[in-house]
Image (cartoon, rainbow, N blue to C red; front, side, top):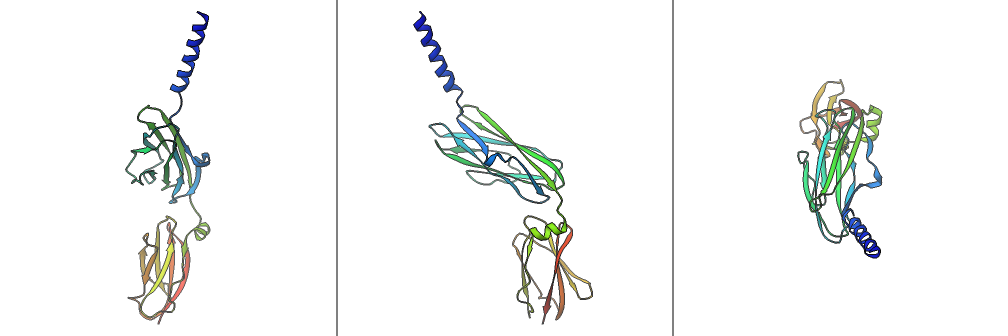
Length: 227
């Protein structure tokens, strides 16, 4: 009887251990779950879902937002694709012994602290793992913006017909303000994500100045001349 009892305990322990083994691990690279960033920045949390089992698994992820206001947004990229800001749940498959991408991006629209909670669930075993990813957002001074955003000197300069200005706003909102030598506004053009704008076709010959405005502040001003 003693030998049988010992065997039962051993068998139960092995089964219990197998039952509670995690089929997957959800983790963020370097466990970096709290980040700071400027208003308007795209702040990324790069992570993975690692399949620990010897067969393919299907998991679902769900995002719960805890933002200070509606100007904040977030989107997720998994092993399949990147989704829009309105997609807060999706499924993905992960091969045995492999890992799948699980990256989240938070875009703060105001100063403050916001977070998202991403929960990953194995749809076969119903195991769940959650990670909270937090962003502390701050305003950027004009001097700091000048170090972050990029705008080129127009080329050619001087020019006859039109000239091209290249820029990289690093995710911020921007306008190009064109003025004459007397400081009068000629145009104020919204800049888009193309990173390039052409100006000059409708200008008379003369000297002008173009200013890059980012988040409502003038970051830099450059001179151009039309012949």
